[in-house]
Image (cartoon, rainbow, N blue to C red; front, side, top):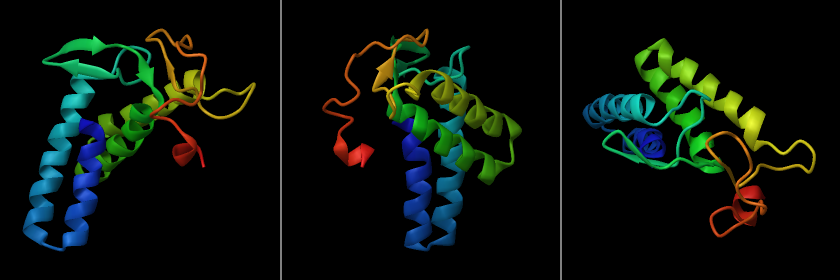
Length: 134
């Protein structure tokens, strides 16, 4: 949730309208995105589902962290101008495009194993429902 929180906090601070708060939140958002960049992306370019203190706890690649990663890394790039965030967004989108999008049957897969092989035969589960697909 860190990469998701990084851009959502920025959105909230923008709406709140306090320039000092926004400055602080943007700085923290870049730090959060940096931590995800360093600890959450693997060689295939997708974000692992859960890691703690640099140790991967759940290496599956769920659909929503990939989508949030694209948004969060682009947000960090827009704030900081640091190219590696733009590259991370592009890499994460590449993972989505190659492994998550089901070109044969449509929609996005719920999750894939770390190697990109679908790990769930269902596209819809309790976290990925008509609300997200609608």
